[in-house]
Image (spheres, rainbow, N blue to C red):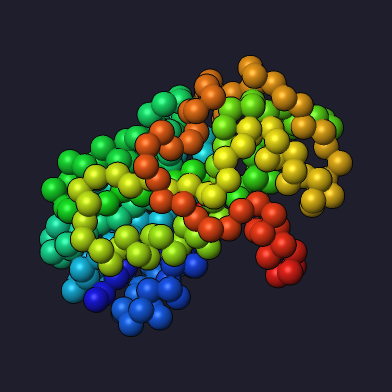
Length: 250
Ligand SMILES: NC(=O)c1ccc[n+]([C@@H]2O[C@H](COP(=O)([O-])OP(=O)(O)OC[C@H]3O[C@@H](n4cnc5c(N)ncnc54)[C@H](OP(=O)(O)O)[C@@H]3O)[C@@H](O)[C@H]2O)c1
């Protein structure tokens, strides 16, 4: 099967490409660096010729509210008609658990991305994932105030990029679900506790403060805003195992 991965050079994309190639598929890692740009439309027609499955793992270069919304809207408006013209049979995209339960600019942009997929007419599967373990350092930085990191005790269930990539590859070669599947890491614990464990192991001296009023990227979060509420497929790599693997790779 010919599978095009938009954003195939990114964190999840670069881990998904080899899994599908090992499965015997013809996989193209498409991104601006290889001349495929969903914002300008450059290279889309050529790369999609003869493609059965498109996996969209692109991300906006800017996370500023307006820029990220424009990125996902423009990208979808260019990509979906090009996929329809090429006869693509399955569109897979990676979204985020809870985007319609808490409000921030990035989540609003992912809601807009999902709406465009649902109305595109192309058979699809949206995978809503919890936060990647690889994102923990960025979360700590964004919540830091000098030596203190203020985080809500709302529940958190991060997943390793390796687990995400394995599930994305699996979903891509299965039949379109015409709906949403949710995925999460194997452990669920309060946000402040997970980030505190992470900072201790990586030797970061900042202190995590439990703050029920702390939001998530500016949005208010309740106890279960960021975790799956129903059935979810779980990854296998927990925080300690992920830290061991990251340190072994360093
Ligand atoms: N971070 C999280 O915790 C989390 C959780 C759930 C879901 N997600 C979603 O997961 C997806 C993948 O995230 P990631 O962290 O793997 O992304 P990433 O590492 O930031 O990679 C972004 C990719 O998008 C490509 N790209 C940028 N602009 C493009 C354009 N105009 N046209 C085509 N491709 C473009 C980049 O290509 P170049 O290499 O050429 O620049 C790169 O391959 C995102 O949609 C994100 O919303 C993230």
